[in-house]
Image 1: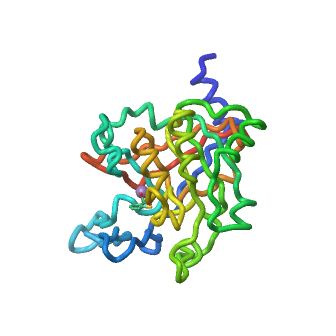
Image 2: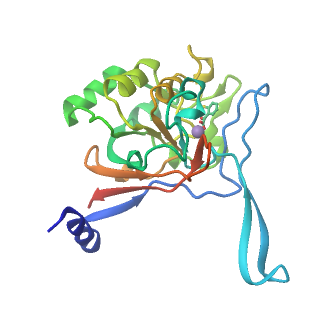
Length: 258
Ligand code: 23J
Ligand code: MN
């Protein structure tokens, strides 16, 4: 049997499951708030064009308005200044094969429960690798923080007088993953692939700086990472083919052994 007919069989008999890593996208979907001096990305608004009424007696459809980086979304290399001159750096030019890859799930949920400002370090990654093997080139690295289990925008954004507090990557961990491991990119449960406090790091937003400068991708606001094994799942994450797009909301699916 060919690999693909085996796959069809396994999906049918349930030995491989499809896990949806995507959050619902609606008007209540939280969006990142940057300091006032910067432009802001709007959340989703939806307006009815017609709903089986005078504007369209037999059809229902809506107009959407939203920032590219809203809800479960993809970050393309062109999103960051460090990736602006790379070839194939936009949502319509990235080769489609790069949208499918094996997943390494790094379970940091105990660390983030103890410290909302937890940052992944090279030592943490190397400890994970001593148990699960080296992170393969062209794989997605997914950071399980259980942030998707937080209820409501306030708990997700977790802002106090010193700003937002959510986990992310130390600069040297992003460098290890991008340059030494040559990953496809990183996926997180938080609303951005940098820590809440990362605007004040040196450089600011080091994960965006490093990943996109190396032509790597980001996935934000994922969920259900707790349903995936540390290794062995495949992630499919294909953004909308927006011409010149810096990213887009998308449906992220994982194929995982039952
Ligand atoms: C712009 C500036 C900072 C950040 C972000 C966007 C994102 O998180 C994003 O959605 O790419 S941290
Ligand atoms: Mn983004």
